[in-house]
Length: 126
Image (cartoon, rainbow, N blue to C red):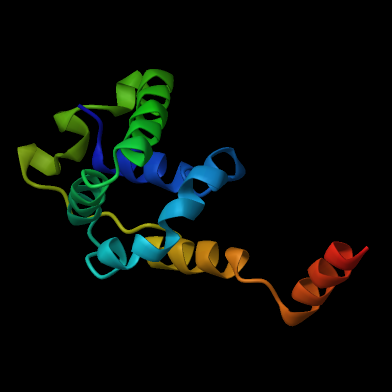
């Protein structure tokens, strides 16, 4: 079983150029997950997996990346990694870059500036 941080990393990979064309189909649907994100990796990983249930092709890409990450770091996986001292529950981990920021940046990349739109119009006229 993958750790919460690995699940989040696999989701973040969906925002890279490798999966960009697939993710663009779902940018308008990211509101459904963004409202559930916070500072707790465990809750974020659960929110990610629940959201992905509605988008099978995106979920498939996520699972592919999750498998790659899990195979690359087999010692970092499992329940023991998530434990605190003496088997107690560890403090929630906080991400260096919030998932909300990542989602907002992905939306901004698909929004064209007026200058870019003018250049597209000129190219179409040519």
